[in-house]
Amino acid sequence: MTRSWWMTAQLILFAAVLAAPAVCRAVDLGISSDTIVRVYERDDRNGGGRSLLPVYEFVRLDYGSVTTPGLSLHAYGWGRLDLRDSHEDGDAEGDLLYAYLEYIDPDRDHQMRLGRQYLFEGVMRESFDGLYARTELVPTVALSAFAGMPVGAGSAAGRSGDLVYGARIVQGQRGRYDAGISYKYVANDGSRSEELLGADLSLSLPAGISMFAHSTLNLLTGGWGEHSYEARIPFASMELRPFYQRYRYSDYLNDRSGASRPFRFQTVLGDRVEIAGAEGFWYPTESVEFGGRYKYLTYDSRFGNAHMATALATVRRGIFSEAGLEFGRVQGDLTENRYYLGRGYLYGDFAPWFATGDVTYVRYDRAIYGENSALFVSAGVGRKMLDRALSLKLSVDYSNDPYFHKDYRGTLAVTYAFRR
Image 1 (tube, rainbow, N blue to C red):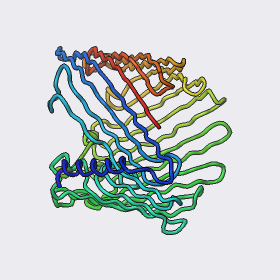
Image 2: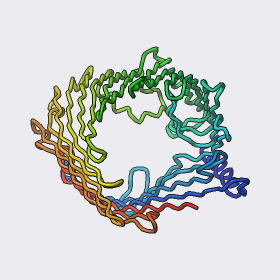
Image 3: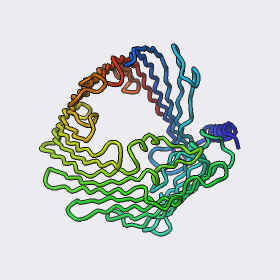
Image 4: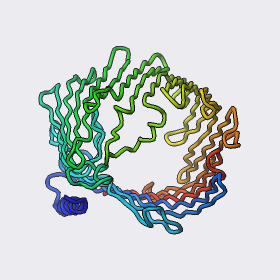
């Protein structure tokens, strides 16, 4: 089954749904569009320059009732056209990120989705073309399963022999706990490419304390790829969030031929990474927030160890306006991991106008490629019209760091949302 055949079949099916009359319920149609025009002027550290003028279009469609269960349609895609220069893969590019039919029964005990979709449940973190179903076996036990063709593997080496399927069973009591076990199998070109088994747990304890944990076992290598634990402990107007994460990339990432590996660059950090720390927040009023974060990162090779500590403050005005400051220090074994970091940002809503600003400054202990600091500055202004259905924003960005020298970027964004 080729990619074009599958896409055509989906479009025909979705067109039939759009043409069908609504029965016994009000149907809503929502369409949103984001048009982004960007201008790049870049001088790299080797003295070369490049100018780009890409235009991006993002379109989202939702068709169905937003208040009652039933049948609905959801689709989202993007396209890009380069007006001044070309990327290596040509002047134009685009993709359908998701497009699926969804059915939820009136009691909300059963759910089905058919088409291209994203799934995030346990170890099932996939973009695939196929079928997903979820049902409550009894009030405290739910089973979900999916099957289809993985999108990433198909993009890498065609779809012949590609297959992905998995399932998750979860037992719990609403407001108290959920415990789940999940499984995923991926075949690429007819051979086993990935096989994972995972466990996850969430607990709601007295005094508002909650805990979350999940672990992933790689059945191909026999090793644990991930352990992640977090707790949230509120007291008075404060909250503490301790956490611990451990990754072993030879077990966590799929390095087989034809596999989709969006985070394969992580392997340069070494095979094992451990992250431990905590973050805390204080809310003296509804509009003021103070916080702090600490992380200790341990790499088994290359980057050694590093401590990171930051403090932040946020002030909010009304619903949409916000301003914040952040200051931090990273102290690591290597030069690039020893620096001070400062950041300030704001978003002001002065209906119908709004303005944004962001400044980030990094000061290194020792120069990197002859540069002692890095700077990023962004400023934008926009206006909302047609009862906030139409939004226009113009922004300008500037950056200068040890890796790229004097980068300029301008962005014009037009956002339109329609619903009836």
